[in-house]
Image 1 (cartoon, helix red, strand yellow):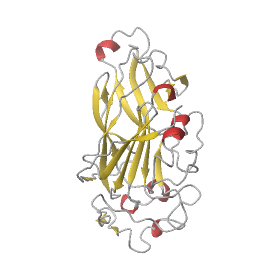
Image 2: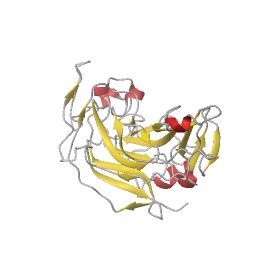
Image 3: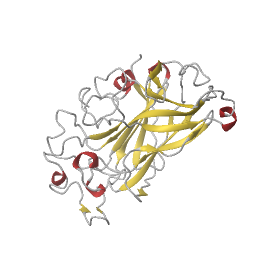
Image 4: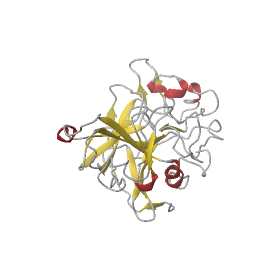
Length: 308
C-alpha cells in the first residue's frame, strides 16, 4: 500500500445552506447510481454532531465544520453477501462486477456546500481514495450536501439485484480533538466560509435558541464534561474489516450503519437470472482507513495519528 498525499485540487465555492425539513438519523447518499454510468451525487448531512450521544433535539447539536469520505478501491475492498459474510477481499466480488477490481473514478466538488475548500486524497498513483471538505460550517438544524462524481461499476452477475457501495463518512464538529482529549478544553468556535460566526438558529419544535459558539458556555450545557465527550465527530461506518489502528473508538463507530450508495442491476439482466436474486455490498477495509484518513490528511480536525 502506498502512502497517501493531498492532490493539488482546491476549489472555491458559493455558500448554499439547505433548510432542513426533518433531521434524519444518518448521513447518507443523495441518489442511487446507474450501473456503468457517471453519477453526479452528494452526501446529505442532516444534523450536527452530538444528537446520538447527548439525546438533545437537533438545535442543540454541535455544528458540522467539515467532512471526509473514504471510498472502496482496488485491493482495499471487502465484498460481502446479503448475510454480511465476507465473499472476497480485493478482486471483483467473485464476478459481481465486470472489471477485475473496483475503481469508481471519484471526483470531488465544492459548489453548493457550506465548505469553501475541498481536497482529493490520493494514493501514490494519483487515484482518488477519499474526499475532504473544510473551511465552513453547517448549522446543526439545517441540511447540507457535499457533492461528488463517481462512475458506477457494471454488474456482471445477472442474479445480483443490487450492489451496495459502502462509504466511510466522517462529520467533524471540533478541531484538534481526539479520544484522549475530547472532553477537555473549550469548544473551538467555527466560522462559515465567509468568516462569519455560526448564525443564531431557532428550533420551532422546542423553542430552543442556538447561540453563537463564541458565547460563553453555549455548548457546555449539552455535554457532561468540558466540550463534550464524543462530540469531536460522527463516524458513519462500523468497525473496518481487518481492524484499524486509528478508527477504533467504540463510542463513535456505528454498530450497523454505513453511508451507502446503491447501484441497481438492469431489469433485463435480472430477467436472465436462473437462480436466486441476491444483494452484494462492498466497503473499504481497515488498511484504507489508516492509510488515507490520517491526522495529516484530515487537519485541522484530527490531532496526530492516534485516537482520532
